[in-house]
Image (cartoon, rainbow, N blue to C red; front, top):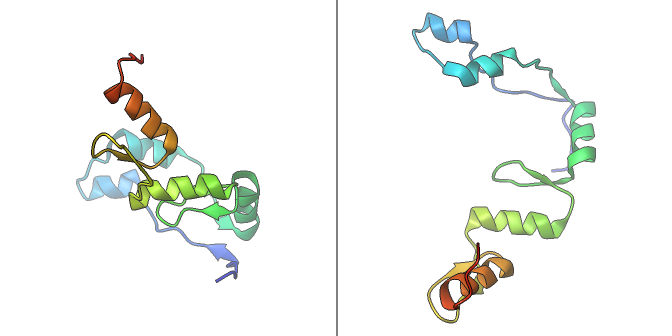
Length: 113
């Protein structure tokens, strides 16, 4: 669906004082979160974020990408789709570079730092 909503709503995170009323200590993370200035995500702000960070959005975690190749590599981290397999053992990897590093580290006499 390509329709853009007029505004996007976020689920309300309980404030520190609300949590304290319930006897819950949310800790330092919640203090930082409460101190942040929050604004409503409007269509204009949404479009600005997309313009800066990219149009390709990961459906699993929401990370944005400009290039399809980077997006595809990232998606494989969620789906565990391994395209490269070691010929000497059962190791598999998402990228060719990871497989090369594995072969050098595990199946050769070369020491990598």
